[in-house]
Image (cartoon, rainbow, N blue to C red; front, side, top):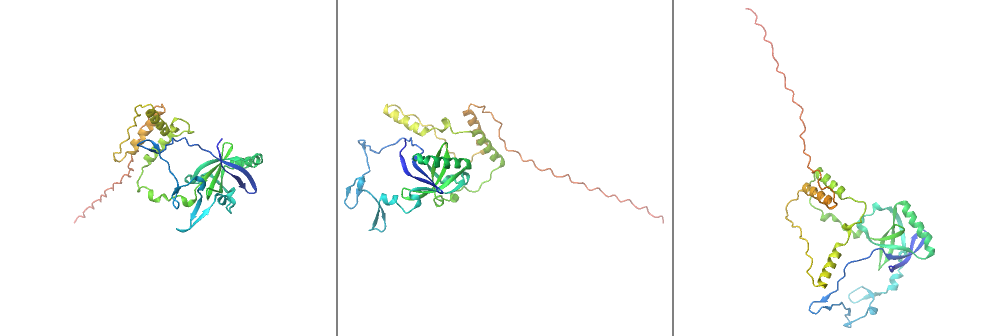
Length: 299
């Protein structure tokens, strides 16, 4: 059972839904510690007080806001949890919008909202079914960890999920990152669409979507534990700096995708359509005018 991160309520107009917030995801990454290479002693970060020049325990550490170089305003966890905000104790729904209207770049970590006790069962199910039938998501405000945030509420199976959202001014403008202007042919775009169709599927289940990085790390750890030779890394593709033939690359990509699925790799070659010159209408040849010679008068 995942631990509760936050407890409060969803505020849906005058309807209140008491909830617990738990993480919706798990991190299975391989973790490393820092060690002194000479003797493999554990290296730890210790916290020192600059005034007393001594190490302090966690129970002696608190938060503070530096007003000036000499003045720090202490702020306790109790004061943060009792901010004069309606969102300090509740997830306040502000609006309902189509999911397609939300920039995915603004959507962050996901959390399950668990109904808190029997009193929350009916209003929780009411909000869940209303979201399901409307095909919309709720946008809400809430305050966690010393700041107010935007959130997105949606339905996943029979649970309500809260996604953290970034504020509009937290999204960087990509204009300076855009490539220089280039021209694409219709055939190149059609080739890309054909490759997309070949790679399309109905779900994200399968070996292609497993964490091979963690598996590779575990292989190295196991090989070193047994004092065996490390597995070889695959050869990296060399960047020749040459201009890529897009049509050839698309063609080869489609063959590789089909071969990896055990399908017939022979596909019709995607050739650029030759532009046929427009036929010019035949020019009409002007008929030569012949003028009849007038007979001479007899003198």
